Image (tube, rainbow, N blue to C red; front, side):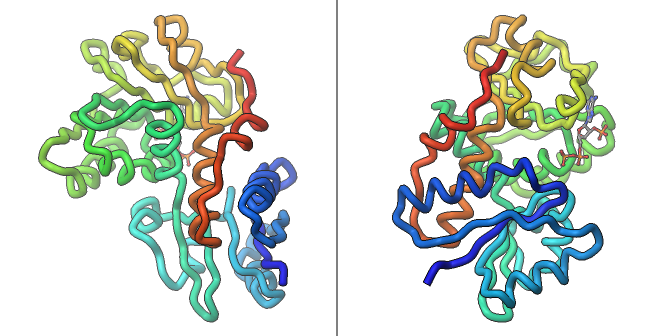
Amino acid sequence: MTDRYAVIGNPIDFSKSPFIHMSFAQSTDQDIEYTKVLGPLGQFHSTVDEFRQAGGLGMNVTAPFKLDAFQYATQRSAAAELAGAANALKFQGHEVLAENFDGVGLVRDVVHNLGHALKNKRVLLLGAGGAARGALLPFLAEGPQQLVISNRTESKAKALTKIATQHKTLSTTVEAVAMNKLGAMQFDVVFNATSASLRGELPAVPATVFGPGALAYELAYGKGLTPFLRLAQNAGVRQLADGVGMLAEQAAEAFVWWRGVRPDTRHVIKELTVPLV
Ligand code: ATR
């Protein structure tokens, strides 16, 4: 029997998840159906109830329902707990398991696909919203030398630093630094986890933050050369990336979780890549 999965969001038309998961299913020989569900606002619970009653086994969750999905769950992973949000659900009888694979997908893309180990590296994380929160534990698990969190609203960066300090190992230093105080610092990897690019804006970060051989990583996907990536390019950074690999890898994590088999993400990344121009 064909197993049923779906992505739920509002809007949902532009979701790449059905393409991604059906590609994975084809390449791993899994008999699944994967659809899009437009969730009416304020009706997340009843919409998911309906999908489960119809035999659905799991869902990816996108905006604006990640918090609803977290609340709907009966069991939550540490990553979901820390993010306070879920992007994947698994249904097992009466149990609803919640996961958040965004951070682990991001790290897998950086380390595995882009070949930038984070161990003993200096990492700058711009932003302190949901996307930054999700990345925190997976970053720390890699054992960077330094993790600096910088956010327009400083108090949020400080709050996130406090959480990070509870989860870090001794060899990693974690601190919050105001964007206008970053001038004297350099990093091996700079992540833009702010939502500035979605509006074509540039976080007020100095171009000097990129160290020699740095990677500039924009978590947003499909926006081409965003103001942040342009800043990096103009500063001489040669390795620029957007969130296409993160998108594919978080989907792969959900696929492994649901199906027990890891798909190769290369085909999907190639198909979905939007040139950085
Ligand atoms: P997401 O889930 O995408 O992380 P969010 O939780 O609303 O969205 O967080 C948005 C992040 O982008 C925040 O860190 C926000 O900074 P503030 O905490 O100061 O609001 C950051 N952000 C949004 N627009 C920005 C801009 N133009 N410059 C700098 N940071 C910006």
